[in-house]
Image 1 (cartoon, rainbow, N blue to C red):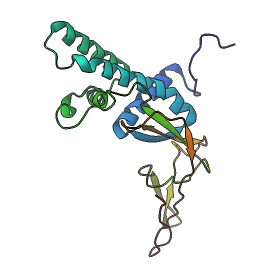
Image 2 (cartoon, rainbow, N blue to C red):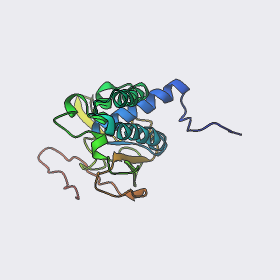
Image 3 (tube, rainbow, N blue to C red):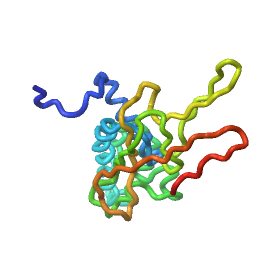
Length: 203
């Protein structure tokens, strides 16, 4: 029995799981939309939402001149930095660095939203090798040569053997309302021969 053993093992060691969670959280905060598996998305989701909540809690103390408020803000900032270990993405969370003046931080974006900062959208259809359309982002393409001919292969899995169901893991829009998981069918695009146009993607 697995008493007091939270979380998914994901067929990895403990240190590998910690690194996976940090790397996926950094990728999600940087790109705000990634394609991954159901288990990984559900494992990383609470970690990302707690980081955004830390940044939201620190927002009232950000521009205060009181020493106690500055110390509390610095405490929240260091907590997030120790958990994520990505200085650039922590700056994006708290509105420091380039996000202090030029762009709104994630804490400011979700200042009025009480949780539910991420969304998991299940991608229906084949599990491996099915491009999910331009709305998801750039699809990785492998170019190789066989028999003197150059060929290319598009995949959505993390590796060739990743045959798990894919999901779209993204940050929600600040003005929306928290929604339950939903399922969408991917748009399949197959590149044709030279001179032929690719089929149009459905919007």
